[in-house]
Each structure stands twice: as structure tokens, then as C-alpha cells.
Length: 344
Image (cartoon, rainbow, N blue to C red):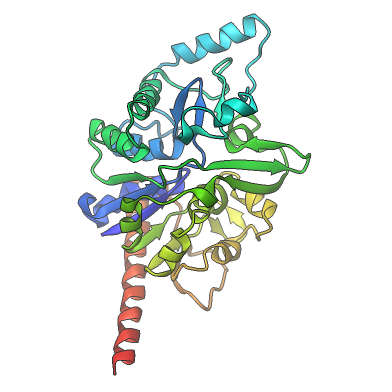
């Protein structure tokens, strides 16, 4: 068995090749839910759904978001109505009382559907409506996602990081506190980041199935260390579990150049060096790293494997996944030797 920690697009891209290296029945994916929002009453789980749609063969791979060839009739009409009466299409948070009322899983991240600042396709919306309705029927988020995984014939075991609410909030240098989706989708990472908060994480718990998954060897793909992996690490017990199992991480940087997304700005905002060295500092539990051939970073206290880490297609993903498997084997072999020496 092997467990992948997934957020953003980095790890989902890696999963395209992982199923050629490990049998899908041997793969669990723990997905970040800190980026989730409730929009117009529907729970949207972007990082979960990227894995869901990719595994189901329907992901829009041009955007790595939503369902390919989806229509957006409802979204367009929501924006037309709001614009027609002067309400605009900017993010509209519900008031403080509404943020913590009702459905607990959506705490601190509730937005009005007026103007719908995030584009939701029509088929995509059906997924959010089904998930939210299953929650309203009394199912846990884990159960709801398992049902959706069955509907999309997903081969791997897809797990949300927790059934409890965790909200990734960006504190800006201007003194604002905004949800990550406003920062990234509405403002395109324009505000300077002063800090990142994972609200609710201290009171959240990994589910029993997540704890079981984290007892297996773990691969962290080239995901954003702050907002894709950070929410998981903020949950009590997760980092300790990772310290007790073999972990291999793929750097999303080549030296100090990030492949894509806002990882560099976010790492700088939380006081970490935006580089592979900074990623290594953020993952003290990682036993090994997979670095690009052109990455000049030296990690003398970690096992390092190198390859071309750019992932543009499934063949690239398979190459990187095989190197991850090699790194895991090296870590497990070193641990076995150490145990044998102790036994002697």
C-alpha cells in the first residue's frame, strides 16, 4: 500500500502515472479540504474533486479544474442577474453568525451565491449538490465522497483529510483576512501575504481511515507546501504519523523556481524560503526527496533521488512515480538495516 497526500494540481498530475507503478487497489489518496468553501449553500471541495474527476476520466485538463466540456449556463445566469441589478460578481461572505450556524463542515468559509465569483459548471454543480445533500441526510464527508467516488468509478481510495472543518485563511499585509479561494480565484494572488491561518485545525481530527492510510508509506507530490499540504499538517496527530512512516516528497521547485501557482509567495508569507530547501524545512518528517536533475539544492541529511520532475503527461507522471517508488525502497531498506543493527 502507498498513500498520496493531494492538494492543488501537483499530486493529481503525479497520480496519472502512479497507477502504472502501484495497483490502484494499493493506493489511498488523502485530499486537502482546507480550500473547501460553501458557495450558494453547496459545499465545493476543489482538491477532492480534482482527484475525483481525474480518476473518473472527466477532468478538464486544460484548467485542472471542473469537468471537461461542461456547460456553465447556471453560472452565467447568476452573474447576469447580479450585474443587472448592480450587485457585482465579487466574493460575498455571509455574516459572522451565518459562518458558524448550521452545517458545521462549512464553518468560516460561507459565501453567497449572488454573482458567483467562482465558475461552477452545470455537471460540476450536480456533484456539489449531491455531496451537500448527503451531508444534510446525516452522512459524514468521508461517506459522501466515497459515494461520489463510486459514481465516477474511481479505482483509488479517495479520503478527505478530516470530517471536521478546517478553513485556509490568508492574512494580507493590508490587514485583511480572506479565504484562500478569494485570494487565488477572485484576486489572482494579488494581495501580499503576511501569514496563513488554518482555522479549526487545532480542533479537527483525522478520521480512522486516514490514520490507517498514514500508517502506510507516504508520497507527497509536487503540491503547494503551504495551502495544499499545510492544512493536513496542522491537524493534531498528522505530522507525528508521518514521522513514524517512510515519507518521500517531490519538490514543487527547481532550486528557487516554482513550477506553477502561488507557492513561492505563500512560503515567503509564512517565513519560509521559497525554494526546495524551504520545502525540506517544511517537511522535517520526510525521509527522502525527489528533485529535478537541474535542481542545485543539496540535502545532506535526506536521501535524494533525481529525475526530470516536470509532469506534462501520463508518461512523465509514471517516470516520477517510479523514482518515488525507488526512493521509498531505499528508505525502507535503510530502516530495515538499522533495525537489524539494533537487534544485534
